[in-house]
Length: 461
Image (cartoon, rainbow, N blue to C red; front, top):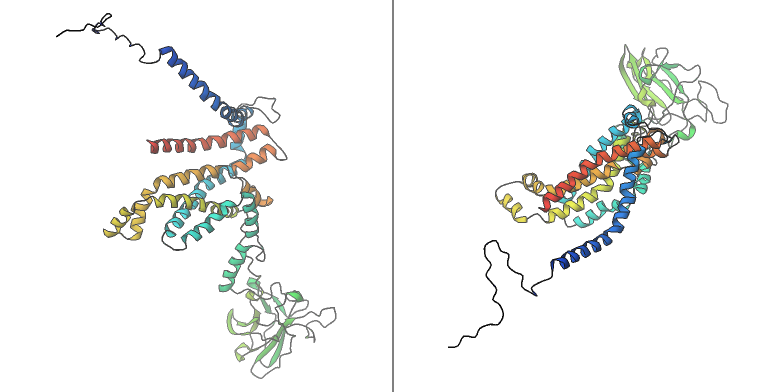
């Protein structure tokens, strides 16, 4: 057998410490690889440059300038250091804004998230759940300005305009009847004198067999109840105390004082009490013509018209007053953002394994235990996303407060974002203090953003 020798020098084996010689044609040279990497970096930088320019112009530069401007006075010429930040702690209005912002951060996101969770869970099993979710989510399509105008009308103090007070007054009047004659009072030379608790009482005791006249004034004719009749004179009866309660006023003038004239109106449905020794011994209600009849028990007693006859109609709750303005505006915010929370939580709920829920029910857990021990823990990441998103959103709340809160109580409803606007662009503008408030607002938002970033990275890992 013949062995064919290969031409050319043989490649010596690589010994210890000797690098193998590269084989010709096996790959690109090191210089070409570094050139390719530089070319890729340049292409990436070219694509990122517009975004970086916009980021610098719209985010980095304003933040840096705000920090710089916060160290100068109102004019921007005198360096004041941390005086603007100290003013934040000294100013009562800004402290109120800080306190209200804390209330917003605690109440609004938690309430919206809780309602979103309840809506998402309850609508999962009903046939019309999709329609209900659409209705709850619909306010998200409304701008904050429009929502503010809507709720400014909803919270109007007049029950004839404000829906909230119309409902509240309706419920109240169902259990507590209002007077038909608010503002009625004795006239000149009247036999009635003021008594405790807004009541009126006769000067002298009454006697059986006599008719008593109890004239009142002070009720506008158009304010009298519909169907009011003219007053009639009560006939005296033996063993009885009779009388008439009426409006001693004749439209157009004329008429006699403390006497029933033909066109004067009766006060129907008014309660009359006979009081002796501080105790009520007999009572009656006036008829349609204002007359009443008391038994012989009223003989020698004083007649009293209790204050309930003259109680002013219940006007409802002052939703936009100093006490309730912040909770009222938070209610408007929850109305808008509960749908957002419901949609995100509903998407997370759809991904929950149904086998776990059914296994828990098979093991004897009731629905509340399934919800508390399985559904909520599995939805914890989604709930955290919703809660953190709403916290960041609440920190910047401005337009709802500005539109809903009347000018007289805007200081009571003030929040940091609104105070930033008022300080920087208001009548007595102070850009230095406004920049300090902006930096403080950024400092409050940054920890929440960092927490959100860490949480997303942890979930990605």
